[in-house]
Image (cartoon, rainbow, N blue to C red; front, side, top):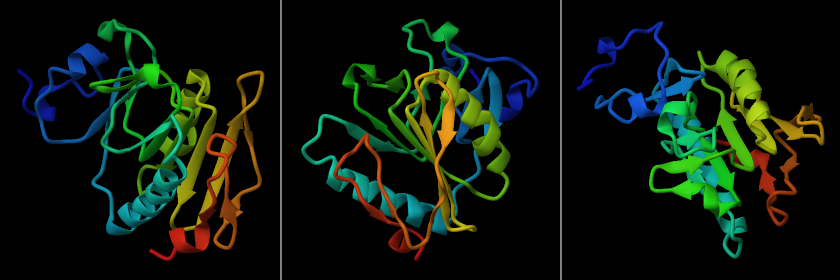
Length: 193
């Protein structure tokens, strides 16, 4: 039994089947089979996450869509064979409208919306690695929230499966999405944390 992350080969390649056997406290994600350690979120990060999650929860009150916050496993490959799954992420927030993707372990397949909040040290992962993974998996919308810059970058998947970046949303903007039609997030309130 694996009880410490130090028992794993940092250069090894792992699957979701392996991930399910690990019994240690560290939070990790698997990105294309590679272990990615997750840092504990800061107070500000958690405040921003809570504010966005609260607004999404209110907007989804009478919707079939469901919202989840980290830690919540998202297996981007939709399959029941855990040995075929090489990517398991824990987005800060995600919205799933196809509830057939939900199971007791989390989400199997691409959520419609994923929101990641950049923390010091994880910007490369969010900006490049996860951007590519989410685009390939078919996540319809990907938001990257920067607490330091007080901006939200919104990427929407086009008909060719390529992300198109919208104009950045800044502190005095309202953030909206067609995935949740009645959602309006006041970024001034989000970034007041």
